[in-house]
Image 1 (tube, rainbow, N blue to C red):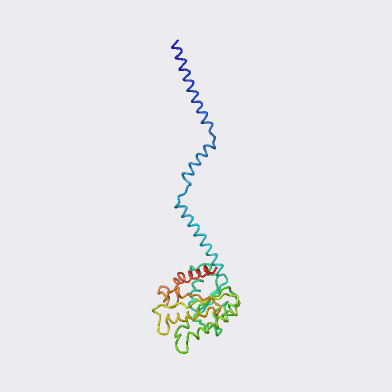
Image 2 (cartoon, rainbow, N blue to C red):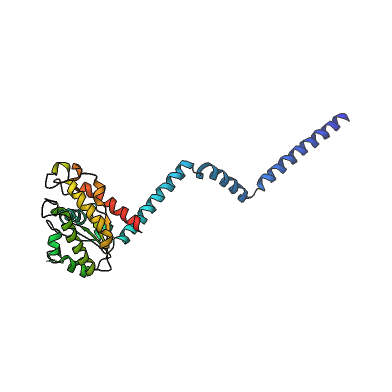
Length: 277
């Protein structure tokens, strides 16, 4: 009787164990695919897609640089649209740099018009002798009148600096002639905004008793003092070069190298636009 009872006991125990295993198997089969995918997705996200702070900062910084550059280009292109640059051989050098198809001048500058001539001066302009425009040398006021620019940048005077201040050849007299030329230009294009760029210095080695940076500075100050009376905007461009033109920027002590255009002229014009929009 005892042996039979023991067999019954063990059979019951085995049946209970089998039932337990079956229940566990049913629970596992009952888990939905969505539950499995959610668990996998959570692990994947935490392990692979969470960026570090450093990477995120670099990406943001790069994106902002691209957007800022694009915005600056658009601003500069808009500011300098329908703009004329006119002047003597120093401005002619800048024109050559800008218009060189193999050069690196920015697009916003290439849209500008350059009316320049070597050895051209304030006296020449007053006499009606002007640079070439549309294949014809003519009075600068006629050229500007046909263009009707929004802005005119003028850089004249370096050819008059030699001997300026000597008897009968005064800064005051030259200043008066410059004022007369400005008045004629304003009469020809009354809607244009006129900018007069100060005469840049020469190198220290190029100076003589008759041609020197002190005379250039005195003439520039005389123009600055008349700016309000003339109704123009005076640009202290010469200050960008300091007391004398650096030899690395000079081609012959007076005229400028492409390095000067890249490192001084273009940044200066960018600054003017940024400060006036």
